[in-house]
Length: 118
Length: 112
Image 1 (cartoon, each protein chain N blue to C red):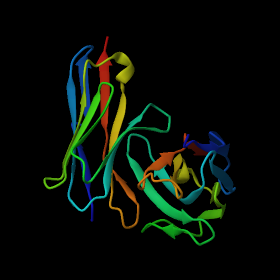
Image 2 (tube, rainbow over the protein chains, first blue to last red):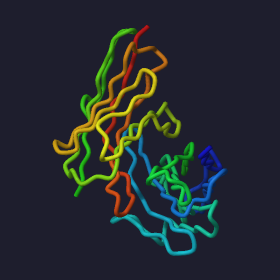
Image 3 (cartoon, rainbow over the protein chains, first blue to last red):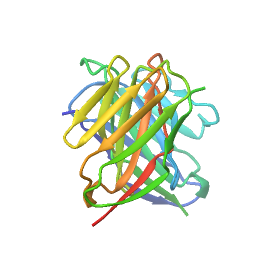
Image 4 (cartoon, each protein chain N blue to C red):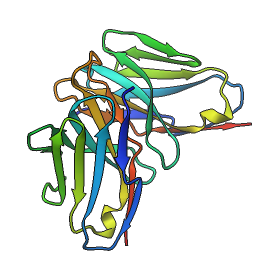
């Protein structure tokens, strides 16, 4: 149980275009989802917290107009990188928290999406 | 502001050795601490989760301990194998916001 998927697993796009990444909880309802970014040889940095049915909360320094997050259902959150630039190239990982079980705040992670902007 | 540090940054050991990875955090007011494994280019695999009220957790050859008052956790790997080679990350959860703050990671290489 507690499986989180991401789609696509990798994507290459041209500078100036937008890219959407999906994060799905496959066997549980995720009231809260998190989006992280990881640059090469660095650790994960939290970008934003997404709660179902409400606006996302962004970490300091993360541009909310550039990284659009939508959490329209209890099993799906999307991250759209708008007007992507080469410096947005990174590994994006989502996680989801099971809001119904006694998992005591444990987060389940997706496999990540490799974004390359040319 | 919570800061999480892992030592060493990299470690290379021969197969069969027992080893210890260290994680320290600056704010002891945590809800839980998790150890993860990350293979190159892949996502995270959760290894062990320790609640703030617990002292240790064990899973197979892995044992994680937590000393909340001193802001430290260790991950002990017994009888290391080449398949254990990966980056190991610890992360603390402050609880109120459920945000995970990740450590800097330890890159482990187990030589056959």
